[in-house]
Image (cartoon, rainbow, N blue to C red):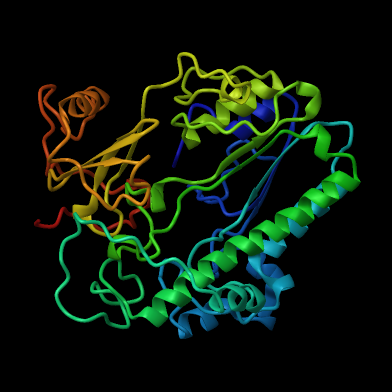
Length: 405
């Protein structure tokens, strides 16, 4: 079981807050509360221990419908949802959040985590949202000069065939539908968040609540002939991060920050905002100075990594600062380098022209004490085996082995 030394909900609960979770949250064990008073979990559209599907009942067999149409929980097919909007997971999350706010103890401060599955496969927004974007000319996928060449015509599914294919071209119609569906899912969330904020405004809560809006990952959407998540490229790794403080806290409005920040900064930001202590185990930093327009002493770069969830060879580490991104593929040793100011779509690899030595040194220092052996302290060492990303969730009797490269 996961046993973190501290959680955001746990620290807020200790500070006297009601703590409520609605929607998607990966937990192990699944019903361990990790500091939440109440969990209303709906991790996916798959029918296992899921409050949303319990509420939906047998009226709409969502999982069977989705699988029959190829719209899998980690796939790339875009199409309209068969459900009316008011029966979707996104609508359900906001409805449950509003009901909680209506019935909560008004004498107690609250922490409410509303977590949508979308925008995420299955790419099935309500039909109005799909149709809106399907009728538009949408941006074509970015294509980098560093891509491995693909021989042969586009096909109906990615080269790594199947509903979970991760690489390769698909036919233009399928690509258009994929992108239309993704934009439709985002639009649907925007409208439902407006419904939540309108309730908070009408009830007087909006100007009393510190709000953070983030996402856990993006989506490649065919950029560089890639799909899904787990990539170092901005389409996958760069996500919205918005924070809004009550006006009484005195923060300037509409500050746009270009400093490197990450999801590890959410917990210390919220804890400092409410005056709660930040545990020593927390690796992130409070964003309150940046929200005041003060970036003095901020981190020089942000480090990200992924072990290669779908393909072992896609394991990566990356560093990004206010302008440049360095990527090291931890299994193959390949390096990529991008100027994000001049090339925001990461189409031009500058690794052969740039001096990468300082970036390698930064990454070596970051990985120096890691048990996988990514570095000996002098150089980066590719091809190191590592355990499954969540070894405690591998079923008993199953051995996860490192495939040959």
